[in-house]
Image (cartoon, rainbow, N blue to C red):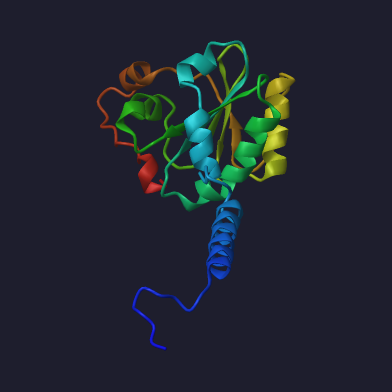
Amino acid sequence: MTRSPESSPLGTTQRWVLVLVAVALALGLVMLRGGIQSESPMEQLARRSLDPQTALNNGRPTLIEFYADWCQVCREMAPSMLELEQSSRERLDVVLVNVDNPRWQDLVDRYDVNGIPQLNLFNAEGEPRGRSLGLRSSEELQLLSAALLENQPLPALPGVGSISRLPGPSSANSALAGTSSQPTAGPRSHG
């Protein structure tokens, strides 16, 4: 008996079993990769992030992270930042600002961002409390957020400092009359 090209060595039942196995494998892969919405923690935070001005004016303490998509340290810290955002929702605003987005250049300049990740910390009135440079562990992020939520001094961690009230650039330039000023390093220089 010769088979025609259209005939298959598999029966109908066997074909259905193969289809079901293929569908099960595909669903298993989707679930292993984080579901249909497989955004990275940094992408999830950036998507849900409030506008910085809204966050600074809504009566909650705010943590602004200056980051870049290409920054490996930012990506490493993102799961802890996402955990912080989820655990403190409605009490603390976690805002992400991408230093590579020209939309945020005024904030990068205003907050003197010269390395990333940089966290700027604000009290509930939107006043600067401090700044943190570099990688932060989940425990360190919890300490920083607790200090903001309880309106307490920031923890003494390496790379964390309080914001001092220094004269603005025009006052500083008039005090340095006759001297040339050197441009500061930008965030992409890891200056």
